[in-house]
Image 1 (spheres, rainbow, N blue to C red):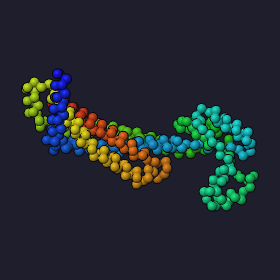
Image 2: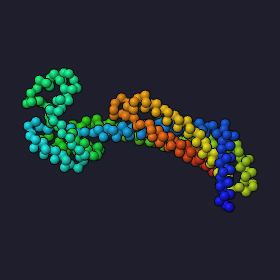
Image 3: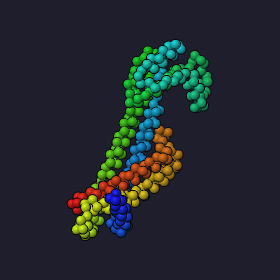
Image 4: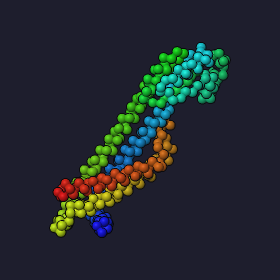
Length: 302
């Protein structure tokens, strides 16, 4: 019986909470507008953060150390170099690229290269046989490159040193800034909603006093306001969710998923946009309910 009674009370509070949002819509509008604006900014920050992480992963996956070997080495010596490289702890894969293959690829890239390279004899090819090395941990890229450089028979080691580290460092900083921005916006929104909902609650002090006089508990007084906060959060999330889904899908379609270069590739809209939308809805609901709960408890001393 008690359980059924509690369910009926909850159902009544949910119905009353929704009605109160509509009845006091002019006052609720301030809270809803606050959530809309904040969630739009949060959506942009989250999309930016996830895509920056995607850019970083693409660059890391494309990391290749190019190992140039002495032209005087024979096949056995080159195999020994490969074995020595493979023995290093941070090696994921090694691919051999002969100077003949390199020359053929260069010929395909430009007619001028084709003319020059075609005039070379087998012994006149000045290029180097190379190993293309991929590493397991990109953070140890520089250390691994220096280890390879010390191997006998290796002439040069190249991996975009300096530029790669700087690029990753910039991406990490941007990602951290965006994460801090999201957290800060959520906290600021919660604070603003507490204050805007406080106005609504103060306008209904008489209703609350009547409930107190008839012996209503603090929980039963607070619950309808918390449910109102839930509906305010849901309503405030609708526009940011629609903008996220359709806006990001349109951006992806217009750019073809690539901005400037293949390294700056956007995350595919689906299910990514739906995932972000779900997070926005949860943030809106939690912030709305938290704001209402705090406003009731703090300003009405329940």
